[in-house]
Length: 333
Ligand code: PEP
Ligand code: MN
Image 1 (cartoon, rainbow, N blue to C red):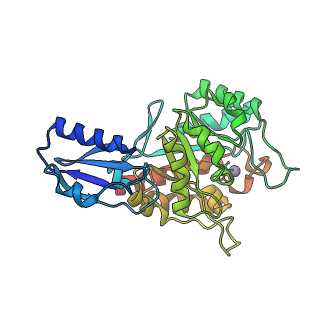
Image 2 (tube, rainbow, N blue to C red; image 1 turned 90 degrees about the vertical axis):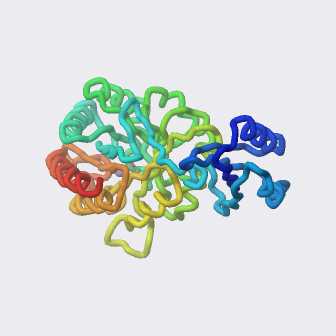
Image 3 (spheres, rainbow, N blue to C red; image 1 turned 135 degrees about the vertical axis):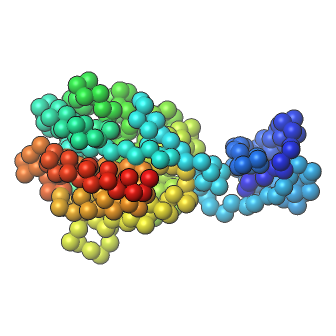
């Protein structure tokens, strides 16, 4: 529920009303919409008499919010959230590109890719150290050693690091990671989400393989309701009957999410398509569709990659894609 106060309400009147809401066990968020103050009420509102509330001198109107997501809901927070990763901003007109290999393999590999993607304009470096693989016999990532190599690449290039966590027991290892990624397979690992809610670090939350937009927002809500509001949402394709592409990229999610939530929305055309030749056109489409950023897999030698080589761009292909993305940004900005 939101309560919109009349213009001219004094600080003292507002404070008393907030205190009264809090005494009813509600959490109150406050924002300014033009010259009106809007109070968002989170909690059990069944005890609130809406008609009585609307009779108060200072109340303009009360509106019920039917959606179950509150903290991520744009109705409670109309301005775009800008996530700040050590000075690299995402959202609210700030476009970020996260690039790097699917997995960290060797020191030479991650540093070579990091230097190349930085030169082409990437603003953050990705690389998996803990890999969620469909087969237990496939490469599972270098784990702690992979995180160490990512830190080395950060030291050399200055690019902040984005890497995936699979288990809250590993949190200690992620202390120096700049953005913690929750992969598609863990989007509804609620115990992990609650633990990430206790951090201040930005979280990149990827949409699950078979999850709805509302389920994605409810997962963001798990993190936000535990105290961490630094979330970047990521569309990475969903599973449909189509098998030609690895997943089906749901680009309509960009304007839908921008309508429903204030959180930044980025698109991963690599996992969405599974084919390197489809990455550039879909990166361009996502940019044209209003995405706040992209996540793109880049490998210095895709045929030899230990994971996702078929969808990985070479550094030269990435450079070409970045030039086209920049030109599209000029049009949509
Ligand atoms: C990844 O980004 O490395 C990854 C595993 O992606 P997803 O969780 O979207 O499959
Ligand atoms: Mn991958």
